[in-house]
Image 1 (cartoon, rainbow, N blue to C red):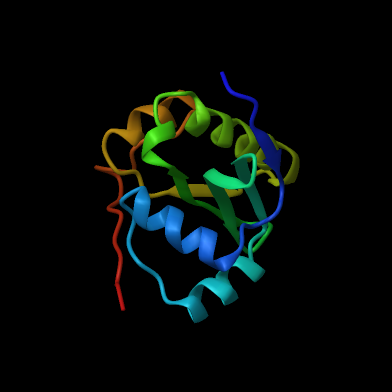
Image 2 (image 1 turned 90 degrees about the vertical axis):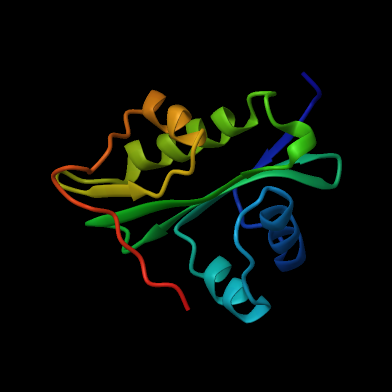
Length: 135
């Protein structure tokens, strides 16, 4: 595997927007990204030289509720274990910063749900339904 540099801070706004689009995630406005990145509880970024190739973040209130978001890997780098690496780093953070009763959620796209299952995430259905409202 190529040498990758793992950092623990959010990417730049432009890198974030570009990686989301390249990875097939939804577009976000620059203003929303600026505010969102600033309010991250934790972020993992993976670079090859100066190119952002993978990322993930944790958002939430820092106590009762956490959400894993923005798991993205540049298409040319998929299948190289970078999604797993990002999840390992995020789960290490969660193990050190959650409390008894803390709730950690994520929205899984297929086939990434198989990766999240390996980290102990389970489906809420049929006990509950994941829902959203998009603007």
